[in-house]
Image 1 (cartoon, rainbow, N blue to C red):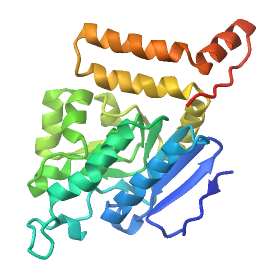
Image 2: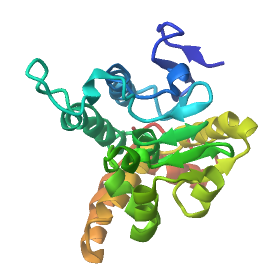
Image 3: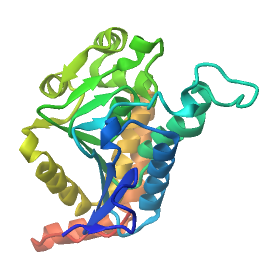
Image 4: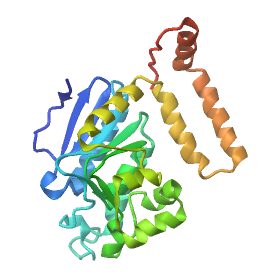
Length: 274
């Protein structure tokens, strides 16, 4: 059974662990799990802790209640449209610089796979935070909304980088400029997410995927993500150089030796690297 960390049940972020899989649950259901400075800080700290914890080999992120995350909570003081003499740094640029950019970069540099279980609406920064995870699985009733244009902003939390790479420029602009709701099934069809499943199957599906990934060669999985992301900015020859460098490192690892030995001995491998 999952074991809960020592945090109150009404904390903005809940942390549980089942074997090598740690689950982070956004826990502001009455506000559709909208981000505040407090929640963003807790989320970043939890990801840093998971990255440093050798017992964690996969991370799942989901939301409590009927939403995954409605994006930035506009009632948060950090979202004032104009700085004031008393709080000159409280504006959206500071919010991105202090919270969203480090959070997006933390996701992209995690040493373990990160899965997102989108249990309901994912809007604005909540949508792009989800899309920054390695595998996104959504409930059939879930939806994705690039809500920024509706309040005079542009996609953030990595959205301008992620969207065109996931679905192409034309579809990315359609999503960002119009800000229309995209259902989970359509999101899967256009390649925005990995999988759409019936609502009742979401938690079990994601946990099974996470447990499967946790038993795999974690370092190789993280290197694969890193190589893919770097290759998007390189030409073919330079991308192959990155492959060579990473493969040289992985070829010297315990997991490679274990994988080959297990294959030759016709047994299940036990991977340990991270």
